[in-house]
Image (tube, rainbow, N blue to C red; front, side, top):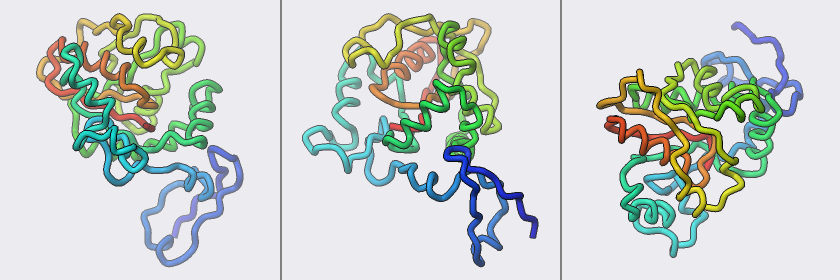
Length: 238
C-alpha cells in the first residue's frame, strides 16, 4: 500500500495523523490536506433548506419561511426587476466563526493554497449539474491589485476547472459595507465581455459567500439579458 508522506494541515499547520483501520486501508488513497480537528469545524449545510438560496430552515423562524423558499428569496422573486434571474444557489457550508477565519486568510492574507480545501466539493457539484460555462464572480482591477488574485477563479483552477471570463467588474465600494437595500439598488456593477457567446448557455456562477444574493443576482441578470438560458450559482458558504 502506497503511503503519502506525513503532511501539515493547511489551516492549523499541525502534522496530520492519518486514520488507521480497515476502512483507511481499503479506501481510495488521496493526499491529506486537513487534520481531523479542522475538518470537523466546517459545518455542512444539511436538512431542509431554501430551494433558491440554500438557507437552512433549521435556524430560521417559521415566520420567515414561505413553503420551499425563505423570506429573503420571496422578496427577490416578488420584485419584477429581479424575478427569475438567478435560478438557484447552492452553498456548501454554514458561515460560522471558523469558516470566517479561513476566508480571512484566503481572501485578505493571500493564502492561495487554501483553495485546495474546497476543490473536491466544487468539482462534485460541477459534475452533478454539468453547466456549459463556469464563471467566477470578477473583482475590479483595484480589488484584484489589493488581493493579488481572484478567489473565485482560484477555487475553480484548483478544482481542475477552467474559469470562463464572461464578466468584468466596474470598481465600486465593498459590498460588505452596504445595507441590503443599498446592495439591491446599486447600479449594475458588471459588464459582459462582448466576444463571449452566451446565447442559450447554462452558466454556473462561482463566489465564496452568499450574503444577500445581490452580487450574484446582478451577474445573473446581466448574463440572462445577454442570452443565457439558465444561471445557477455555487458558493462556499451561506
